[in-house]
Image (tube, rainbow, N blue to C red):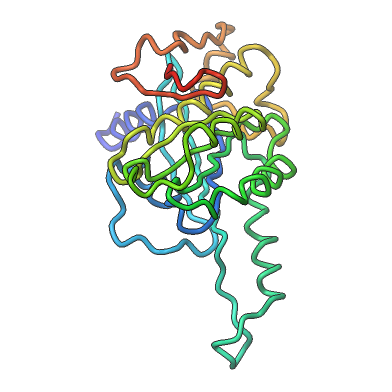
Length: 258
């Protein structure tokens, strides 16, 4: 075997995964969605971040138990740029509707949603119900949603209390935690929590990755196990193999982490 062929096979093996999952990040402009995604995928804060226009895409492969999962993440903007031809300062409202139609198309087939608000902005918290309604109407019927209160490092500027957001999450049957895209605190947690919930749904049989619109598909590693008639075991999903402790605040736990 040639060296180039050997390197290609090694790369393919390293990048192999058991499942591919589609996630969306949604919420009002200015809540730090882009910074949250950048911190998750690059492990660093995104300096001089500008409002996303349209959709930003990124991906990362994570490990849970014995499973390797590739996450395809779409950060969907609530901002748009569309001007009337030859009148650069006038907004085209028809263009706005077209923009919304295009961006909402990315909701389809999403298995997980990261719903973000800014703990220092009550306005960003006020419209959560609409964002959640859109996601549940357009994404996978088995959509797993995690509410994230971003900018937890700015406690002195807080306008939305943790208890209030926790109640909202419990009432709307979504998970909840706070994070900081600046410091990286708890940034991985919502993505891993989503992934763990989806894996458990697959294991229980309530979610079928082969069904269209599930937002999940088998990767090469899983298909090899199926072809060899091996049982798809999820290993330790309880977190016993994690290298570090991730604090997850779930609704109904009284603020405790697990």
